[in-house]
Length: 433
Figure 1: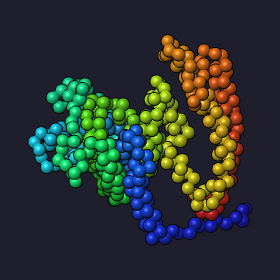
Figure 2 (figure 1 turned 90 degrees about the vertical axis):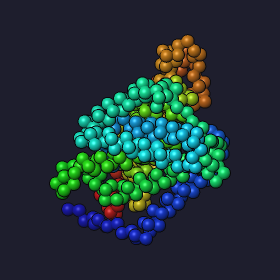
Figure 3 (figure 1 turned 180 degrees about the horizontal axis):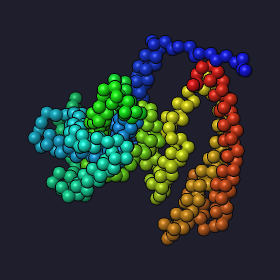
Figure 4 (figure 1 turned 90 degrees about the horizontal axis):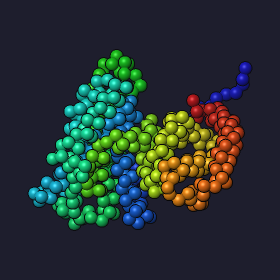
């Protein structure tokens, strides 16, 4: 019989928790304000604007997927409808000289997404699980295909454009320069994120979690799971419409791509790899996915293949997403044992990166000999030129791939032992269940 005693972690002060909570939001606001000062190039401002839009869109999707347990394959419909109504509103406001400034337009897009969610949501949310997923896919494809037919509203393949600088001036801001658009998106990002976070802390947000985990018990205590799913669906559509309107303002155009399955797939990808079980998860996922879209598309012609491989890897090895991986280390950090694990991580990281490099090189070699057979055999990978027509390149890829796999497998086994030791200490201190 063990004589070891388990100590209980000391309770944290409510005042300290509140200070930490408000401090996080203040830090987030400061980051949004200072980013253009640190990275002032036009490319950086464009990237930050896209990241802000993606974060709002991913958080709106997380209301469905992460909070309520509704897997949607057609969430881009509400994003796209917000974009189209925002563009039409800008044209009407500019043509009629209405005293409505540009910062109000995202709210119009939000109400467009809300109205569509109200109309479609009652039937869509009668069932959860596979039934809801298939209905969302069917509705999404129906509306996306209608965009090419109803040209008077959707503009066909060319879409509908607008000029944001012709609207009523807001404090003498023309919203022509990209930095002004960035701050507009940043302001709406902060407002929308705060509102969505507040929604998760309300009794309604808790009931959404209950419906996700056990709808039968929710019904037993007197709540209708269908109504809760429907309300969550409407909130999600509203914030998705805001994101779509901001995208339309940023690009000054809305087209059928806003409504398609590819757009729905991107937001699903961002939410999942970020971690749907945590509020910060979609934020991390949106940042990573937007960065990969911008960078991979310039580096390789098969960047979508890498997207799929990353998604498969996350499903297999980290189903909790990036946020789940980070939160797993929180008990170790509080117990003071994280430092004993970091050296093992660093040792395992080297052969793992070698294995990934070999895998990427093998893919690029195959693509160069199949899809791009008529182009130059030289592949620039990691700023190093590789001649895919030489046998040496194939040997390097094989050594990195298989050698890295064998060594990384051994190092990760050692990492698992180090983790178990650190977790055991954290468990004894009462920081881990």
